[in-house]
Structure formats: C-alpha cells, structure tokens
Image (cartoon, rainbow, N blue to C red; front, top):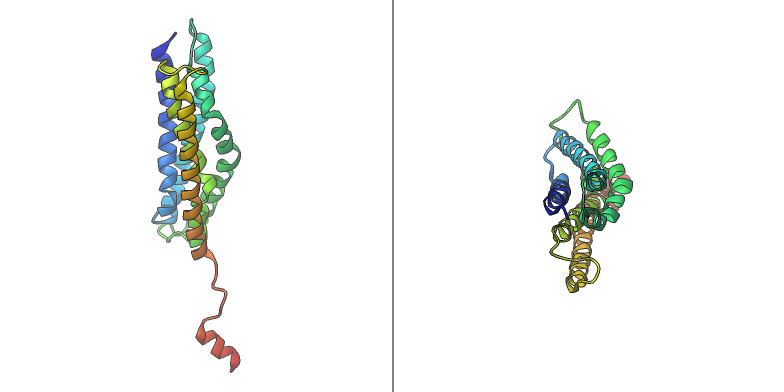
Length: 198
C-alpha cells in the first residue's frame, strides 16, 4: 500500500477544494466589481485544478505498484464535486460576466443583485462540502479508517451530513438576506405617492 502517495494525492485534493470553499465564502463581500471578477476567475481556476486532481488520483494510483486507498477516499468528494461542475461553474461564469460588465469602471461598487448572485447557495456550499468530504477521505487514504466495516465510518457520515445541512442553511440565509436588498421596494415612497396624486 502506497500510504505516502495516497496521503499526498488526497491531501492535495482536500487542500484545493478547501481553499476554493474559503475563497467562495468571501465572494459576496468583494468591495468592487473588479475584485469580484478577479475572485470569481481565481475560483474557476481552483475548480479546474480540483477536477484535474480528481482525474490524477486514479491514474497515479493505477500506475504505482501495490494497492491504493486514494481512489476510495476520493469517491467521498466525487458527488459534491459533480454538483460543483454542473451547477457552481455555471453560476460562477454568470457572476464573472456580470462583474465584467463594469470593466470600464473597475472601482464601481458591486450591485446588490450581483452580490446576491455571488452569495447563492449553489456557489459556495458545494465547494465547501467537497472540501469537507475530501478532508474526511484523508484518514481513509492513510489507512487509519477502513471502508467498509469501521465503526468510525457511521460517525463520520453523520458528522458530514450535519455539516452539509448546516452549510446549506447558512448559505441559504445569507443569500436570502442579500436578495432582499436587491429587490426594488414594493410600495412607492411618500414623495412619489404625493406627486402621483397631484
């Protein structure tokens, strides 16, 4: 068993996705449109790098002699990574294009609608869940936890499930709070109402 190689591969996978999750968490608080565009671009590069590591794990594991636990460990993060590649990448592209519309005024503040789009739960939550799942896969890759047949596996699945729910709720609440600011007021202001009556 190539424990060192498995640890390096799974550690690289976890590091890239955790970094992407942290960067995505700060996406809605960008101070300017140019900064938002730069962060969204960097996030897209990290997603591409994370996808490349996913491909590299089974290739490297099959090229080395002996058994490898890295592909099994990487499978934990495969499902949320598919959500990232199908939903998050599209939303990141929309945010980057929306911020790119302010290329002539790079210091322009981020519009509330664009800030709400950057805070959408399908942007940050799948990235953070993928990073968490890759981190949980690290003990499997090192050989501390055996899958299946370990009592720790059930505990890990429960903890990850609770973390996924907490992450999803947190991002949904954040998006909801920022979306309210992006919606135009439903009632006319008192001055506008008075002018209409006159």
